[in-house]
Length: 105
Image 1 (spheres, rainbow, N blue to C red):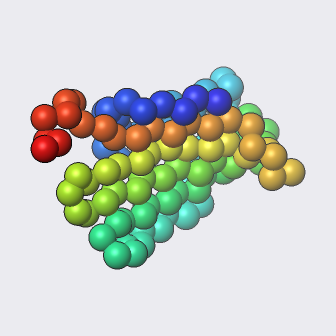
Image 2: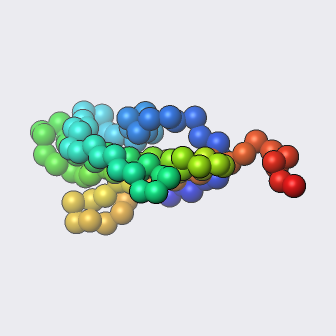
């Protein structure tokens, strides 16, 4: 599992699927895509089904972006892979951070 606090270059949840390490012959199918706002934060979540070359369901992926609408406009972006049993198999989460601390007084 990777948890990182780096400036992320992924801007859309659909770009996250490029980071999934799918086996040859496996495919992803979009299952749901939801966006909700709570307070100043927008939460976007996408679920994908991973299927093998025989079209058998083998795992599920969840990708998300949480974007704060107020300064300092924090952003969290990530994905998780789950076994059919519900066990977490892999995870990557990235948090935005400022390039410098000059904004502090």
